[in-house]
Image (cartoon, rainbow, N blue to C red; front, side):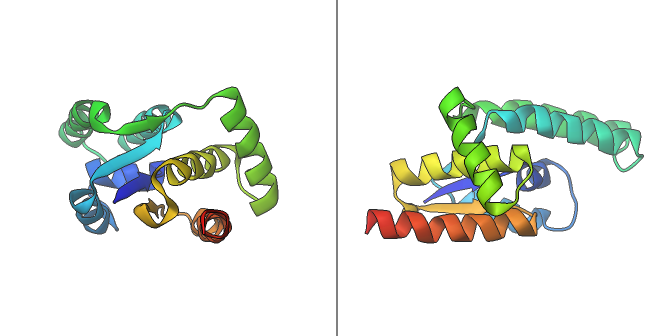
Length: 145
């Protein structure tokens, strides 16, 4: 089973917060973890924001970055190409998403089309994005079935 993580889920792998244990269990069971290349910048920005806000001390911040850098090369990443960004724009419009959420949804769609929708799970801590992923999953299942 492939697991697609948006940035809200990806960060929870490296920072202890609500939902971290659940995401780590999903990651441990996945045959492959997938995300968009834009998640790199988003995750690093999130670690820095948490540090500035005092939610991560210096040690936890350094640990999160170090572990993230160690694991990043093991993830299957989807490049934010021009065609993927155009699809992301369409999906953002269709589902009322922000731009980067559209990129994550389009990236998930690419993974699901390649691996098969039944072989691909999606994880996010954004309710709107999860709802959009469920809708997209139904659409892809109809097309693949």
